Image (cartoon, rainbow, N blue to C red; front, side):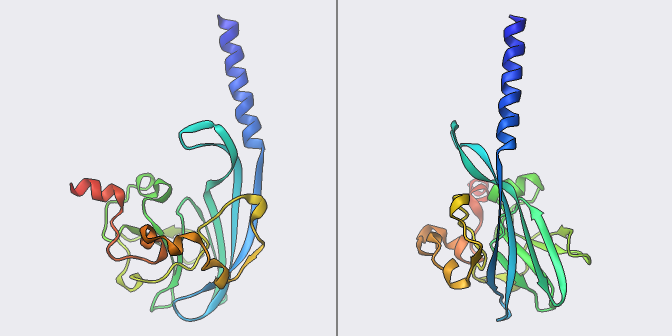
Amino acid sequence: MKVLKRFSIILAFGASVLLSACSKTVQWEEEVLLNTGQTIWVKRTVVYSRQGGAGNPLDTAYRPEKDQALEFTWKGKTFHYKGEARIMVLAVSPHGQPSLIAPAEANSWNWRHKYLCTAPFYVQLVPDENGKNWTWPTSIEPWLYNLPTNLLLDIGDPNKMETKYLQAEKMKQPFWTDPQSQYMQKIDPAFNGDLCKKKEK
């Protein structure tokens, strides 16, 4: 019995090591039209690993890991972000400071960071002076309301990802024509997320 248990542990450990070793890193640049009317290029990095499907762990395939990286230069300064927030908008405030905005529920960001329900239910990430550490206010600022999504959200098969995406190409993402995805098409002031809806009932 002890031998069988040890063998099971070794087998499970070996499988996890094998899966973690099988990863692919994909990088691309995308053209981003800012709310200021200016256009910049943003470098994105996503690591794919073999993961089981939702509800079926045996359905393994290369899927993006939650933590993703983003890098851009604004006014001669380079900014870096790496984390699990599913960034949909890169915007510049009236004071000239960049912000990254994501739906707060995506990738369970709100749960991981103890972010309370807000209206609308997005998170606004604000950089520090070195452009690498990001904090967030308790709710997003009103100047962000209704800004359209300007980053690539549909990240698919690693073998089909391009090395560059123009702004016009990103407008072909399927969510743009999905009436149920208004909260992804722009920063919707009425969006309160599934979790917050349940709490209101």
